[in-house]
Amino acid sequence: MMAHLLIAYDLLVILIGFTALSNAVVLAVRTRRNDLGNFSILHALYTLMLVILVLKKYLFVNVADYSAQAWYAISGIYQVFDFAVVLAALYYFIDAHSFRHGRKVAAGALVLMLISSGLIFSPFGATLEAEKNIIHFGAGYWMAISWNAVAFTSAMVLGYWLMFRKWGTQERTFVLGLVLFASTGYVESVISFFGDFGAASATLTMERGFLYSSIPYALYGMFLIVYFVRFPVVAPLQNEEPSAAFLSKHGITDREREIIVKVMQGKSNEEIAQELFISLATVKTHLHNIYRKIGIDSRYDLLARVRSDL
Image 1 (tube, rainbow, N blue to C red):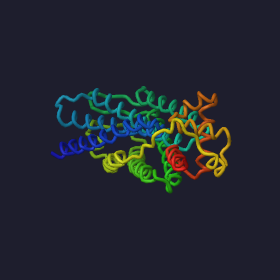
Image 2: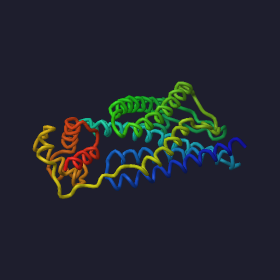
Image 3: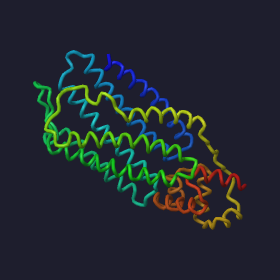
Image 4: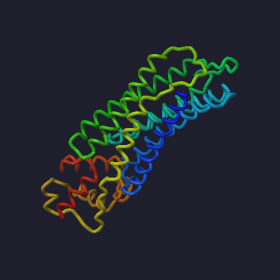
């Protein structure tokens, strides 16, 4: 009975998550904000991880001949999605900070995640003893899990740093909710990591009957549904330019003015880079300098500030 209640709870959480995700995707498309796109990917991966967890529970509870091979395969897929969620969180926070070589760091993290996923399914990672319903863990498995712990820790450090940066902006509540949700998952992962570290094997069980991070995930999902409904979408200003007084007041250079005009036209960072024949990193650097000079924290704050000055 309890197992079925847990499955019903997970399905409700997933429903909330998909509703919030659909709103995030719609706004990401409408506003063409990179951060909303990155957030949508992160949210989608975690939601899919919950779907896999529910599938594991359902098969264990309701399928009499649930095979060890199926359990082994689904457990491996679940672990890969766990890696992907951590990588998506790391990339989200790296990109939000606009680090100069952030994409290279993220690419390196992706390579390590792919290696970790390969280790999980390799003979050096884990092997199945189907007759006894046991998975035997090898050095490769613990190497992969250890890398995941390092990546998760790095993501959390960047997440708290971003929260402090956003504290005085309109995005404070959005980032705070994300960091609190991620923190619960991080604590859960740390407890699991140190509790299981060095274990030689695992037996076929329902596994992680209750995912505690699903509670802040559900609460955050409900917040996001309301937040995105009220999300301010500032329309592009196609035929306008910032005033001379605005540019002078904030010490905006000619190149920065070109960047602002492109933002006002609704251009993405990638499109700005292509049209001005500069690198994406240079665009992000210019935007960072513009935000610092004006005292804002996003391109949509920039649009609102320019609009109020016209």
